Length: 318
Image (cartoon, rainbow, N blue to C red; front, side, top):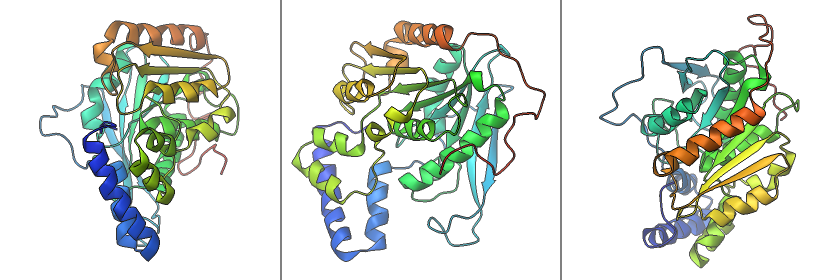
């Protein structure tokens, strides 16, 4: 999420609030679509100067059954994935959920910072972004894509003790939801959240009365504050003190409600999306120390296919 809390955000919220009021009164599908476009600002395609992935990295697509609420019945839909393996075979695998606006090609620098810290990275491009199916996303469609991504993580990383879920900004809401719905406590080893918030309502409360009015009519919630208590794996939260998109106090409120073991890593002077750059050394140190503490014990690698999810299956609770 890139819009700041002051200035342009107030004008954006005023326009969005007016649309939401009209949508609520008229029940108009077009206005509901416009509401979601304003909230998520999906970016299809890729940046013009994208140089491609490294040799050995893989971009691929998973075909999905049609979801009637998103597109016409029978339409083919697909989700884009990037697989960025680490050179070390014992490296844990991180499932990467990005935030609004920027797609994977605009987030590669952050994924490379995570790989430099010692992770293999499996990144999912929600429908509406990148080269995935171009729809107007919703919380529901994004969480559907997260369930598909979890099945891919199970396939790519059969060692549950090496699976990590990561979310930045809006992606933190996706990550918390996913971690809260896993069947088994040992299905995932850890959760990492960067620039996380309590809920869309919590963000609105920080932005003034116009945003609070918007929240009354908004059906998109990503209410991590209601789900974090169901997560019982080691948690690392990283937040910049100069974040004007998601104030650090919102991240702190979410952290306070989380179960131990947990670690809070503030980044003095860090903004919303630049922590891996402005605080490169402490950022890398926080990730590596967390990995050493919670992800370094030897694990048995199951025989190929022994614990891998079958296509179309998931170990999530409904």
